[in-house]
Length: 327
Ligand SMILES: Cc1cc2nc3c(=O)[nH]c(=O)nc-3n(C[C@H](O)[C@H](O)[C@H](O)COP(=O)(O)OP(=O)(O)OC[C@H]3O[C@@H](n4cnc5c(N)ncnc54)[C@H](O)[C@@H]3O)c2cc1C
Image 1: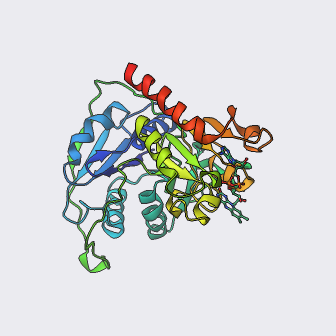
Image 2: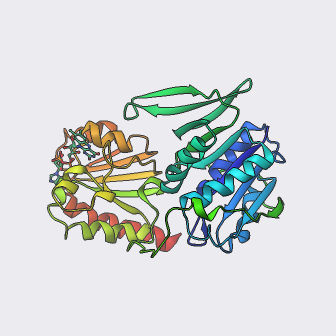
Image 3: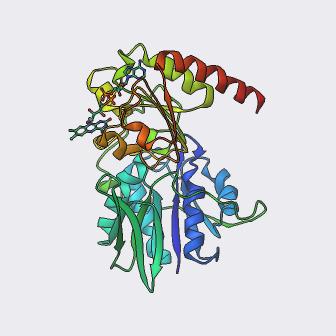
């Protein structure tokens, strides 16, 4: 059984999800690395082949092609389709990142195959691929079986801990030149405007600091951004904060915002409505700061602090600075 892992590269950097996907692929093959292939797309991506080997890729396809250097859906689909035709994979794994969410469903449709999204674990039941995925805002976990010969799966970032296989492992590396049908590429990248933040997207962040309605205005969010800068965290917000115009919608965590899964989620002045919890309840450690000792968030928090956030944030900043300086 061959597995293909799409190892995402953004701005020349390999995303940490690659290690998570390869760890899950190794579990599926029972540790056999020769049936685990990975594909890297983008200028200079060959530099990451070695890292992929250390997480268990037996073979790495390196694609450096004018149409795939900047992410575009159609060339990615054509490239990976050609690899699938060449090697007949049973499972194609990618991250449930903005890029994975964009092209994996279209890739699956192109192959008339099963697409399982936002998955937290993958296993085999005989010849069939079975995954577990949260449903109903994380209240239950569904087990879903794919019926098609090849199955496309996107895995939630930060759910599977990446386990290094062997720091000295080597993979066979093949430069792959896809045959791109330019006529099928209906869109063209005219300009790439980077967001102000170099930090990971909320969906992939391992540290998140969020603010709610209690932030009071958009200027006050600056104290959260300053705190986040100390530890490289990404800043999120509740819907009440977004609807009040304190933060942009791409910062919203929750049922109608982003689903996040960080190692640490710190909520300042967020009540913990069911819709907010839907987006962050699977965070590994939740810390809540709220003036109301009965705020629902304290029922979900691992650590709760009854305090005014405007007093707590500077103290957090001071303490985190000390930790960073001494680490
Ligand atoms: C269909 C639907 C979808 C929704 N989707 C989302 C979603 O995706 N994400 C989301 O977040 N919400 C969502 N909501 C809204 C949700 O129901 C809540 O209204 C919202 O989460 C409340 O945000 P909040 O906790 O910031 O505000 P509030 O509920 O007003 O809570 C503010 C909290 O701050 C505390 N506080 C006040 N002053 C301070 C201070 N100085 N220091 C510390 N604490 C203080 C208060 O005690 C209170 O607990 C959705 C609602 C619906 C109906």
